[in-house]
Picture (tube, rainbow, N blue to C red):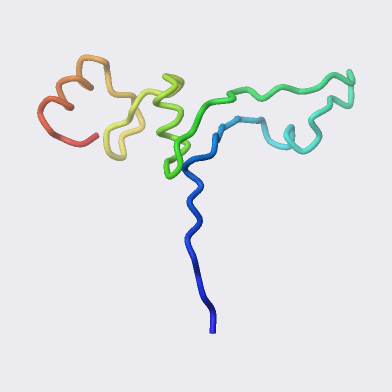
Length: 87
């Protein structure tokens, strides 16, 4: 018999960092010996939440509409929000 319990992690401070592939594993450049920095971040993240929402909140990534990969223009974003349609 297994018992599951929920653990609330939302009160903790969470951050998101974006690294190039394999850079986060080494964290030190083999060629120069310098400490590598992430390409993006640290960006604060809400839990529960998503990486995409954290990037939008930090204004690093513009919101997308549905499955369309092109960013929503600023004037479209405000009109979509006021019309009640979802992005």
